[in-house]
Every structure is written in C-alpha cells, then in structure tokens.
Length: 161
Image (cartoon, rainbow, N blue to C red):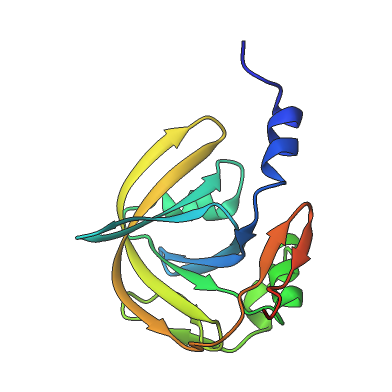
C-alpha cells in the first residue's frame, strides 16, 4: 500500500533542492513558476527534466506544440523573485532583469546560470507532467554565485567552509 501524500511530502522536505524559475514561451505568451523538481538527464544529447503540476498555467502552455522553456538557477539573494513566481498571479515578469534566449524563452540575466530548452518529450506521471528539455543554449552568469536552496520548508544558503 502506498504512503499518503502528506507522508510523502513530509519525507521530501528533508531533501535539499536548488530553486529555479522555469519560464515558458508558447503561442506568443510567456509565463513562469518557481520549481525545485529539476534534474539533469543526459549529456549527449544535453537533456534536463522539470516536473510541472497539471493544474498550473505553465502546464497548459508547455502542452502547446510551439512551447519552449528556460530553467533559471536562482542566486541566494533572489528569494523575493522566487516568491513572486510562486505566489503572485499578475505579471510575474514585472520584476527581474529579463532577456530573451535563442529559443525565445525568457531568461533571468542575473541568475547564477540558465538553460534554454526545446521540449524533447512529455510524460504524464500522477499529478504532474515530466518535461524533458533539450538544451539549445546555456550561460553561467555568475560562476561563483551561491545558489538559493530550499530545505525543510525554508529557503537556505550555502555556508562558507
């Protein structure tokens, strides 16, 4: 018998994750959301994955045939921007230093780094869709920038050793 969703979430809150903004362009629209469910998949071809809840508008856009997206790795000082993309319903792009990547997806010009992707494949899994992205362009903006981390229901920062 599977565990409850509450028990599942309780266990996963103990796994630290980097905080990203996934920004989407499709059908002439742009949108974005805060995501910690991100991972690399393959170096050849360069593939990554993000998991997006079926209930969100980003999911609706990513289902379109012309959808492209970027994964922006947030810097430890970008908590407000993370919260904006998690909770604000209006123009999420009103804040931040935005540029346009090769695919047309919005990228955060002052992120630690970003990956610009086309949709390689889609896989429905429970309440989410796993989007595999093929990386078309990338940039490490701040090689020594400290990433924003989420652990145990709070934002965290890396400590200096």
